[in-house]
Amino acid sequence: MEKTIYIDDKPVRLKSTAAISKRYKAQFRRDYFGDLLKLAKVFAGAKDAGEQGTKEQNEDEQGGDTLASVGYDDLNHLDFEVLYDIIWTMAKTADKNIPDPMEWLDTFDAFPIMEIMPEVQDMIESSMTQTKKK
Image (cartoon, rainbow, N blue to C red; front, top):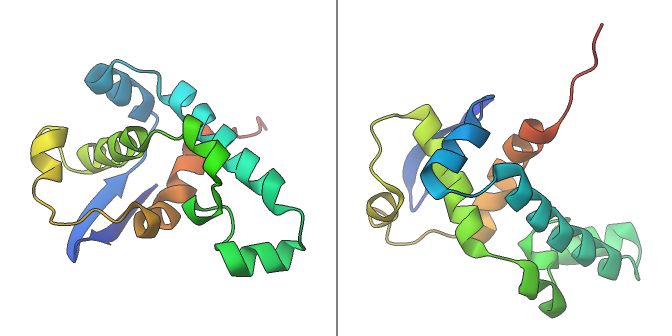
């Protein structure tokens, strides 16, 4: 899966392939799927806490299952560095010429995670889905 998003008004190509987990581990020495599962736990906790109202109310008020729905107690499990690293890995997969993560992040004046995550959420989910054998 590939798409172009805008970060700090700059177009950034992102790509998710079967190699993303290996590229992530080679760069950051952490397990891609393990980090995703930690993030999923944060969002699952936020979703469970948000189910006190109706689903429509929570999605309208909190923007669905996004960072806006994460509660204070969930912050213990949320590591923003993981989000930056996942996005860098997708950008590196799309463009082999981008620099190392710190240098790349320095090219942006702002990196609004709240705006970026809904754009990449489907790409993250697609890297974890399983296809049925025919």
